[in-house]
Image (cartoon, rainbow, N blue to C red; front, side, top):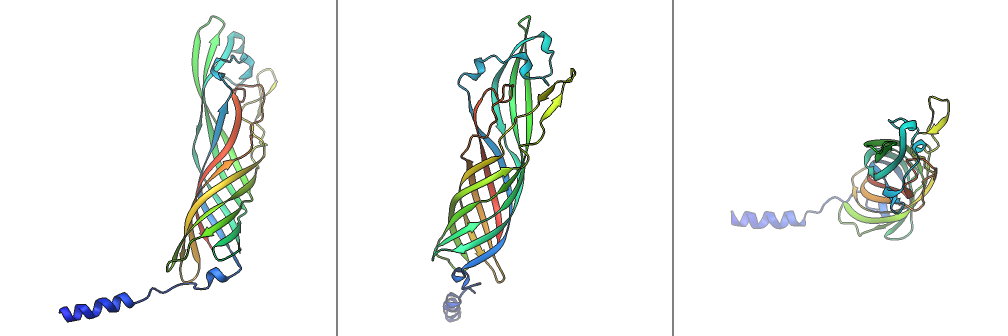
Length: 256
């Protein structure tokens, strides 16, 4: 028995793992597609001491109160809420060197951001009524990410990598008509309005898994907007905001 065991163990140790797609890294171009889960949110920088800044009663035309009986409004808290979404994209990859690739992944990202406002309504007789309002901002990004991928040395059929780059994007939903008509026939804005164009810096990491027919990647990345996207308008949802930037977390499956 001991002799049999001593014979089998070295034989198993010498057995090699089948290396799929052995010349994959030497090919100059690769193409594929991406499917991803995302969470979009905002990074909010508020105006200094915004809680102490009184807003006029007509700055919240759709508010649940009587404007004629209201003295002023105070926003005493702003909170951005995370919501899930998804991304689809097409992958184009160019080999730059032994461990470097240049990737271009035009994508469509769909999600929704939510902003919670806690508002104090001060009436003319100085009574205070607290209101909590959540506004939903639909988002459809057309993205053009360009990034550098740094690959580790491949171990059998698995490799790790780091990535970083920039992502110019257009929000097709930012120009959505957020205007409504009040009881007197006057037009007013009823939501947070943002600019269409943004550019984000991206950082991430992932693993490549090789099989007999294709390579699958699992990637995690963060995207940080570089531009202030808020449209400053004198009403309750934008007055307390100094700067507003996009932020997105994404988990992707890449097939090449």
